[in-house]
Length: 418
Image 1: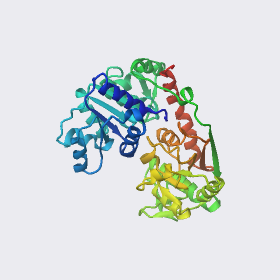
Image 2: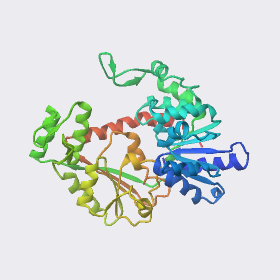
Image 3: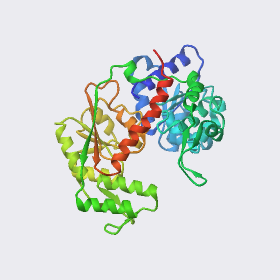
Image 4: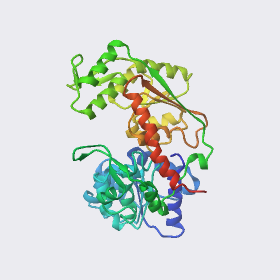
C-alpha cells in the first residue's frame, strides 16, 4: 500500500499504447471515489502521463454512456457498475486490457461484480490486478482473484477443488463448516503456483517511509454502563434500553456498538449508553495541538455523535471534502473504512489517525492506515485506537494482529528482490 501502484500501471499503459502499440483500449475498474478522484488526479499529476486521454464513467447511466462514447486511451469505471457495463449497458465490451484496482474487492466468487467480469474475461487479452491486501482474511481469498487473472490455470477453475486440495474444515457444527484452515504445506504450494505472475513489494524495502507510532487509548465504563454490556453479552437481550440480538453474529455487532457508546435498539432508534470514547476522542484531538486529525468510525450513530460533540468534524464523503483535507483546510475529518479506505491519497492533509470504532476486517484496517502512512508523508504517522477495556474491542485488536500473519507470509513469499 502506498507504493504508487496507480502511477506504475499508468506508465505501463502509456508504453503499451503509444510505444509498442500492443494495447488499443484499456478499462480501469476501481472503487467509486478512487475511480472518480484518484485515477484522474494521477494522470494529471505526472508530466509523462499527460498524453493519456481518459474518460471517467461514473454517475447516472446517461453520464456513464456519454463517457464511454468519448475517444480515450483509458476508461475508468467504478466496480459497482461492472455488471451494468458487461450485461446491461448494451455497449460492446471491446477493451483489450483491464486493470482491476483493489483486486481484493473481487475476492468473493459469489459477488455479481466477479461473475460479470469473469463472463467478459475471455475477450480480455491483458489483465492486471492491483492490491496492497491480497489475502487479508486468509488464503481462501486468493482463488477468485487469480481465477480472474489466469482463468483458473494455477489455482483451478472451481472453488470447491481449490478448497478440497488446500484446506481442511476448521470450525464447524455437525455438517455445517464455518471456516477452513490450510493443510500442512498448502501455503508454500499456493505461493509456488502463483509466483510467476505475482510481484509484491513492501514500502520498507523500496522507500524511506515515515515513522509510524501505534498505541491504544483505553477507556473504562462505569458499573451501570458495564451492567448493560454484560447483560446483553450473557442473555442476548436487555430491557432498558430494549435491545436484543438474534444470534452470535448480531450479538457481535451490538457489543461493538455498545463499546463505542451507543447501539441501535429493536425499533431502529439509537440508544446512547455512555460517552467514554467521545471524551477520549476529545482529549486526543486536543493533544494533537491543532494538527489535523482523521477519525475512523464504523456506525452511522458514531458519526452523528462525533459531529454533535465536535462540530468541526467533516465527513470525507461530503462534496469537496477530500480536496479541502489535502489542502489542510479541515482540522478534523471523519472517514468510514468501507467507503474511503482504498486508494485515496490523504497524506498531505495530516499525519494523525484515531480509530473511534474498530473493524474486524484486516483489509479495511490496513488500507485506512495507509491513507496517511504512505510515500509523500513528511511527518511521523500517529495511529491511536480508542479501546473499551474488557469488551469485544480487545478481541478485535488481537484478531487484527493474528490475521496479519497469513498475509505477511503471502507477501514475503512472492516479494520481489529489486
